[in-house]
Length: 424
Ligand SMILES: [Zn+2]
Ligand SMILES: [Zn+2]
Image: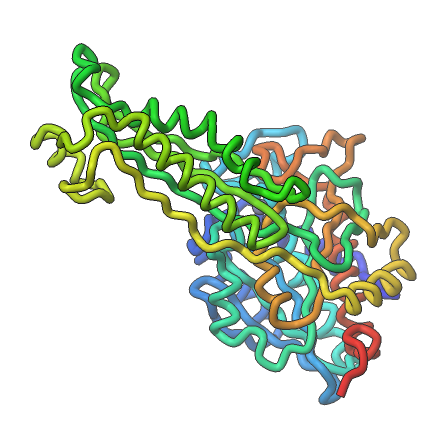
């Protein structure tokens, strides 16, 4: 059973507060990276910068055994943090950016684990790789870059935790097999024919096409998917126009969709495309017509279309997905057993969910587990879900998370075979 002394616990809490008040968005984690490098250097742990704004380090134990990696993500979100009853000591000092997904806690817990491991290195029968990964929130994400920079070289297994504000404090939830969804971002740009509102018969309104797309695409998706398939699609951005009495040249709709199977993901792209093809026909009453020259030029400044693109027309950019996150069954079963010995609230049969996580990329390469960790506390008014401007956590979760990481790492290094079956 791992014990943390009060000194370490308050050190982790202070680090979490520092990260929380200095949030930086994806791939802009420069100060965050410097801070991690500084803390590791102060501890005497060698590290290197990788994946643009990430950090890789090793804590070496007393023995040439195996290596387990522990990963923390680093990025914050472009959300303006609300003032709440509990965050006045550590509210974001970077206006409009907020650690609304708990990545501040993940970094602090991993540093706490590093410090504990260092203090116990002589009893550690293997190595622990620390992966501080940037840009989890923006596909294609930072995991791929960290892997390309060698973060998994020599690694036998991997684990990570993720704090959730709407889960009860210190509940640990996970499941073997598929646990989180494949997530894709799509961006539709629609080109219409601009003009004065007084002559609608001469214009093709890309806002109306976008509105029709938004209201009809889900029906098309349902008709293409196996009725047993689960998916969600949400719209996140709609942009168009600069002038209240002009039909604009273009409109843009951006969103994400999620499913547990990459084949469903492809079917959704096909449905989006066929919906848009239908709309182009429906709105293309003046086929072959070109928009007025002047308008094309002004729209062409930032337009992805060429001047000879037909009107109406569209561009669909469906970025590559984060793969579905699949917890290694053997590893996960052993993890469940070991966690039950030290923690009271362990749910190893949690419902899979449609969130996306680029931790999935590591799990495609090495066995391991991704765990959800409850940070909520309704008695203290801490209930907001991640990505809310009121998201926060009961900081007691920091000690739990640090202990969870250490429990998995030390047990794996002492007894690797049960985690990954028969080892060579
Ligand atoms: Zn998030
Ligand atoms: Zn997150």
